Image (cartoon, rainbow, N blue to C red; front, side, top):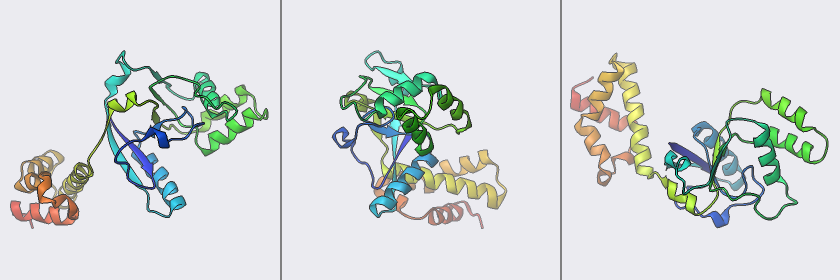
Length: 225
């Protein structure tokens, strides 16, 4: 599974010592399978730090959820169990970690949800009413890597590989849109081309060029006007 982390800068190496407590699933490194969600995080953190923000991409081995060497917890949605777990972690009166899980997956208590958590913690909202309110919230997703051991299940995707992938998507999409070529034929044309072979060779650094340039290279190679 490809997961994303939105921040004000690129994350090359995960350092759990820089994470903070009292988050939804406790202290840890948070990611999401929803890129748009990560882009929102990156934009917000970027604005706070005076940067454009950055989305770092990681490859997560989902077999970790089946590996007996990892202690994991997964929530399917905004359940009562999720609520109790988030509240225990969000409670700032508790300084010590409240769980010993390596990896936790589930929905997010975003700003609106968190405001209601605060209302609950301050005695202004009952659990029953809180859970009823959650029905109006859209689905969200996060995976928290809570321990050093859990980091063995996640690997940084090199920026070059990400750029190559992004360029390929744009090139194929434009072949389909501009030249009336089917998706299957467009992908076959692209992935069997010398252009793709050169782009995939990181030593050429073609991935640093714009997708327009790669698109023009492919069209020239294939004699497309």
